[in-house]
Amino acid sequence: MPKVKISEECIGCRACETFKATDDTNLFEVKDDGFSHFTGKYCDEVKDSVQDAIDGCPVSAISVDEA
Image (cartoon, rainbow, N blue to C red; front, side, top):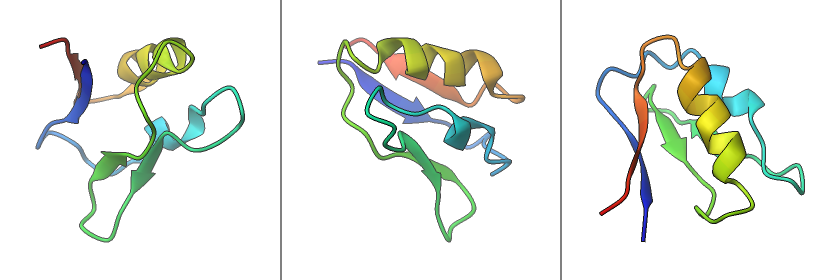
């Protein structure tokens, strides 16, 4: 099953927090450690929003591991 990964390149800018699941729940959250965390469940319904977050990340810290 694919897994959303956030690399150490994350700068905690919160850009990814603007992309939500179709039911308006958060998919990403910048936590106290200063890094973004994927808080959703990766499935077909959120695939487009995750891709938007990948495309919108200013430091390319978000990826999907298809393995």
